[in-house]
Length: 326
Image 1 (cartoon, rainbow, N blue to C red):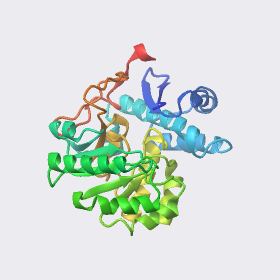
Image 2 (cartoon, helix red, strand yellow):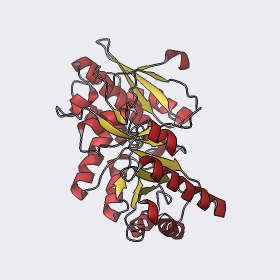
Image 3 (cartoon, helix red, strand yellow):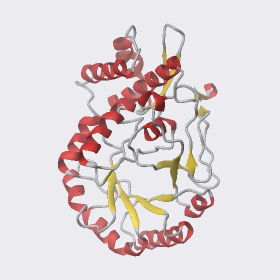
């Protein structure tokens, strides 16, 4: 997903690691502009990290505010939180709050709801790209039937359309799938179509309109709040600006009574935020298919057991990069 590893080293020998977005385009931002700005600055508290965040954001405004610059900033911010946690011998979650959830529910993202049920996951989300073919509707209904049977009445069913539906399609799908109690439709419209998403909230019955993985910083979520565009917010902590931005987004969400379920929340970067804040007790775990093979980029990352996932008690985020892949 075009992720980058960010490493920050302190003069006391601590090393912090972060996970950012933007791929090769964000690397020169981190190693060039951002490095020039933060080398020599002090990090003794989360307030210092917030100060650095504001400094990097302000200085990158001419080319930033959203997109690649914020994805790069996310990696730096997360590396600083990891660094501080190691220096304080605390998990990032405990840096955020003394009250930390001991275990968090997981839902699975992938096209195989039977696999998710076998793993004990509490919900299942399928990716769905719509081009208008009747066969795509038939397959989606078949998925819903299988998923509801496999997970039972208490299981949560979600559909990620990745911006492939329009308003009319979304309303029609709500009708076609009414018997299956779908929990949310995700990313149904282009993220810039906030007014359309706000309108949909009153047209799809009990289905929630969810999204936000393609929005950036608390400034972007302020606009979502102003328009009333979504029922559920899904910031990606490795893209939207890191933990610092995530905490600010949660403050806005609390003012508007909006649930927050971070995108890819079972990865440690979002998981520590979920564990330490008012985020919903629900973390997204990307499973792929039964035979999917992926590179192990991070050592020490927790895995769900019986539908629950726990954060590591190791300092920082509790993980280290696989040096052979760097």
